[in-house]
Image 1: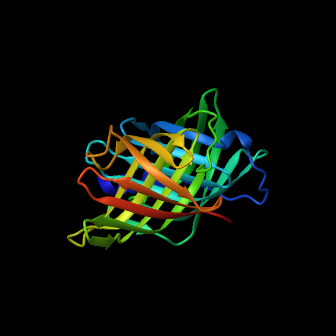
Image 2: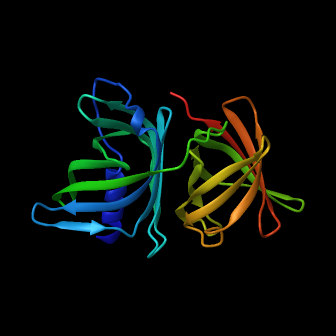
Amino acid sequence: MKNLLFACLISAAISCNTSDEKKIPAMEGTYFMNMQTLNDGKKDTKYTDLKQLKMYTGQFFMYTQVNPKDSVSAFGVGSYTANNDSGTVTESVIYSATDSSFRDDPAQYVLNITITSDGYQQVIPEIVMDSSNYKLTEDYKRSGDSTKTPLDGVWKETHSVVINGNDTTVNQRVQYKAYYGGYFMFGQYIKDSSSKSRTGIGFGTFKMISNNEIEETDLNSTYAIIAGHSFKVKIQMDGPDKYSQTILNGDGTTGIENYERLKK
């Protein structure tokens, strides 16, 4: 039930469909989740310990989440539209992963949105878990600043390697990354050296040091080795929709990652 509940909460965090695709300007931004509330028709059960960051940027969104109790992680990415009249947001998910499973078939969900003084609340009127119906409410607080950078947006990794001396290893993974308002996040579904599949995430703040270098500070991550640490990352833009990054890892290896911007 624990893992099922976690996975269902993640899936429910992305929702809905509408024919009027007006954009709600207020949705664009970076948000930390404060609370999830499940109601089974009789009582509310509140969850406040999950660490989740969500971004709406341009026409796309991304979220990353980690449970500090067991480091079980999840992320999702896709496009969104919004309807001012109905107060709903339609999220079309193209990829999501939770723990040791992933989903890459398209899915749409509906969020009933209420804008608050410091963020927004989203409500899923009905989700099904263990053959029972629940109502899910999530509260988010807006964060970030007005900083604009060439990296703002959601990106998909197209190729990445790890160089160790004369050896080069190609990463076997699916990875997405997003930047907005001085924050960044990454989500990956990876097969490790023992051929086990798992989900990993990280999110935090970033700043441009120069046109070719940024500094990322991880606030929360699946990986304890990077949580709470800052890293200098060399970047190279290839026009507005492609970039590569190079980072010297703590173990002496060098990671090189290539990305393309998501587009409709």
